[in-house]
Image 1 (cartoon, rainbow, N blue to C red):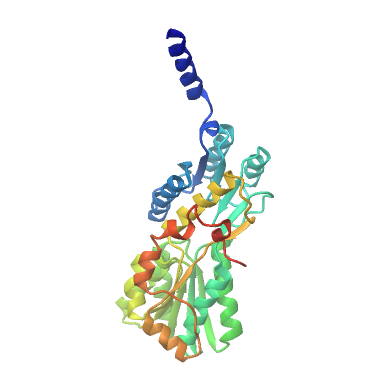
Image 2: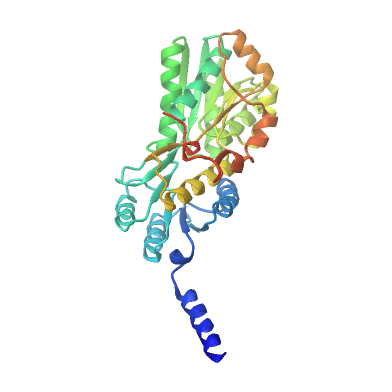
Length: 339
């Protein structure tokens, strides 16, 4: 009896001493920060994904420090985690540590950024095509005439630059009589977007529309337009719940739903599948939705633009419907759309 008990105790001790990777798959995530509401929502849904996929996720905040982010990744490598997810503060500066991780046999996912580090995977969005559709909705709503402006994130950021290019290229090719009077980097700062909108509305009294590569920038611009008594239309990106009133009123002619919850769930789902040795493309593109009101969609259709869309009621549902969209029962092909 004593021998059985001693054997059981020894087995338990050995099990506790075993590295986590031998007991369960562990995903390490190096975030930019975990205070911003977008990242908070990402983590909330990411934890649901971890439970759905039967893995454990550990989220670490770089608190805006590149040095700290690199140290976090180094620590994940030393721990021998099953996969590493990185929201890169600097896509070039993290290349060496990504290469170190992949050399150690750990899959690496660079989130929302195209990072050329060799064997890493990148989770991206169909930004060029989507922002082209936003430009098309604005241009069609304006009847191909007028002045528009564009609020972007920061130069050199893959997402911001790709969305800017999609918007500008579409305007130039399809709406030659619409003038893009300004493109301003905001660093995703609402205060900078507010200042830009005020300058534009003062300088260009005929300004008809403002497009934004992120919804929060459009909200800031609209507050200025309301204060100055200007009537503008908008096109945005993110599918934030806060945009419901603008969309339902017809002021925002198109939004694109990615959604913080969906982004968080999707990234953990991709990492869990890679940790399980599933074959996925190096570049994955998140399934997204165009959002508008039925009334706006009818007006655009009458003007010759017809497209698949969801309204704000379905937007609210789909933003939380991530398990059904991206869960473990779905095939690997559900993790990306064709490009």
